[in-house]
Amino acid sequence: MQSRVASSVVATDTMEEKFKQVMLTNAQLDNDKQKLTYEVDLLKDQLADSEERTIQLEHLLSHTSRVRPCL
Figure 1 (cartoon, rainbow, N blue to C red):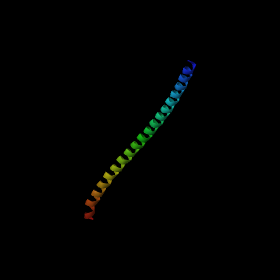
Figure 2: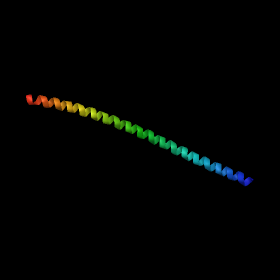
Figure 3: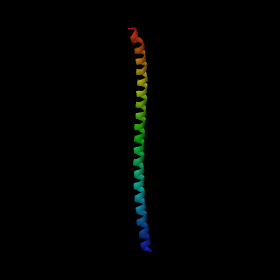
Figure 4: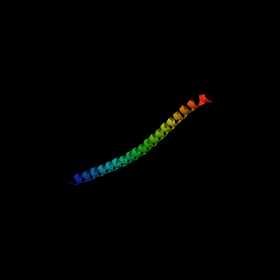
């Protein structure tokens, strides 16, 4: 009977340690996900800014092309 109790205590300790490791891994993965989500949002903002600047430059080029032949 005593060996069963000791075995159960060891099994419980082992399971608790595995649980702690899994929780730590889960927290690390969540942090990684948040970091990557933030980086994706930054890249989306940069892309939007680049697209807006491209449109502005295209308008400027179009206007310059129309005005230049008159010079």
